[in-house]
Amino acid sequence: QVQLIESGGGLVQAGGSLRLSCAASGRAFSGYTMGWFRQAPGKEREFVAAISWSGANTVYADSVKARFTISRDNAKSTVYLQMNSLKPEDTADYYCAAAWLITAQAMGARGEYDAWGQGTQVTVSA
Image 1 (cartoon, rainbow, N blue to C red):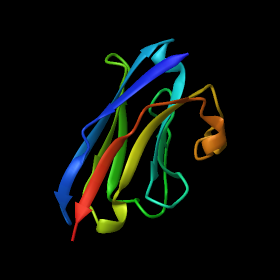
Image 2: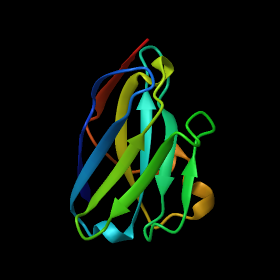
Image 3: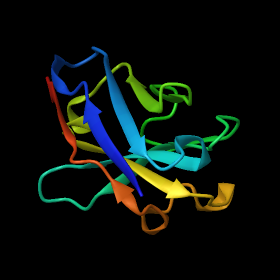
Image 4: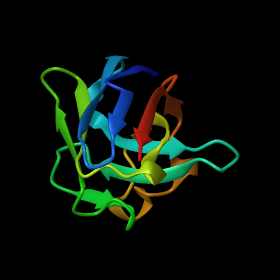
């Protein structure tokens, strides 16, 4: 099992940028598809972005396309989420998640991920 720790959250004005990081330890990181999810107060946890084990495939929620970029560094066992042009509706707790050897078609499915971080809070002010 892999352990995940997120960092990089904070308070930012609308239009600003943040970069989230997720450091992994434990089982071989390079075999995992990595995803970012978020949960706003009173709402369900939703998919944001995912990246395949090699980095060759990425998937984004429509709400963040062209604004967010997911990337990974397997040598550092770390996945990143670069968030640009932030909006108040991006305010949420952001969670890193890992899924072992899943198909590209399943990358956006929350139920496919079996390891989760503790979350990092992102607040975007208007």
